[in-house]
Length: 298
Ligand SMILES: NC(=O)c1ccc[n+]([C@@H]2O[C@H](COP(=O)([O-])OP(=O)(O)OC[C@H]3O[C@@H](n4cnc5c(N)ncnc54)[C@H](OP(=O)(O)O)[C@@H]3O)[C@@H](O)[C@H]2O)c1
Image (cartoon, rainbow, N blue to C red; front, side, top):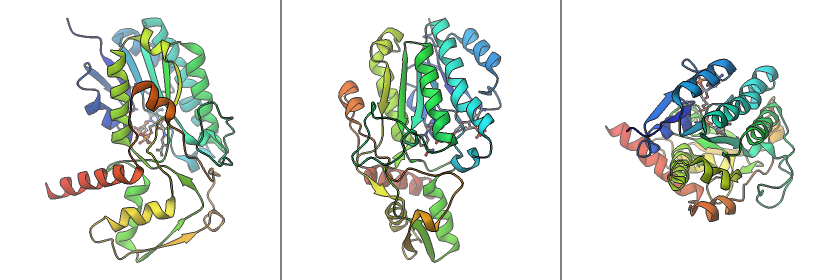
């Protein structure tokens, strides 16, 4: 008999794409993207879960355009705030576990040490508020829910800071990047591999997930500001080594959404509960760039 599948939402996104490969050894993976399953269509979400009866649902779909979110609060709330609750309810109905992702932007960034899961949240913008609402909705509606809050996600595909810096470096000799926002850049591949490792340990049992339910911080170790992250990217990008990266302040680069000044996450809980190792952010970057170089050669 085939094992019950894992339903992945957002399979065309950074994390979702990596999940397809990472989860493959665990169970058949049913991949959906926005075209095949829209998070704003609650009836479609319920119907898909009922029809598929997955062992687990991994929701990597989200409205992630932090600045654009300020202009579309209702749409953002529907995707990030409401849909996770609908998914959780549907998961409960068929006895599936739910893994959902959230963000360091639930914090206001005034902290001075890495944020722990139970630190007070105070999102600064529409995106952060919607993600906080989504965490709460998912956890309220089902026992077998794990929320992985991650941060500063990048990959060698999709829309992200790594690829933006590399593109700008091809167009300019000098970039200006903010040096007063601190975080931990985390690769989508690492997030997907960690998710798979967690699910493997649970043997896709929703009772096991229920016993370990709650919020976990999952991010690379260490911290850096965007400017030094940009410097590290370009220093290791062939042809971009000469590009100068000037440090500027957030005030010199105003954006529609206010971002936390410091959003480093304390990952002790996920590391100790699931026996995971959080590599330093620069090691994950090195791996991603090695991957990118490999595909460029192919
Ligand atoms: N990116 C970050 O820096 C960051 C930081 C912290 C936490 N996170 C969280 O990590 C998770 C994964 O993020 P990511 O960076 O992999 O995101 P991403 O690359 O932006 O991918 C998000 C995916 O969600 C899909 N999506 C958007 N609206 C949808 C809808 N209405 N119905 C179905 N699918 C929809 C998108 O499809 P389209 O391509 O068709 O729009 C896209 O494939 C999210 O929960 C995010 O909030 C991300």
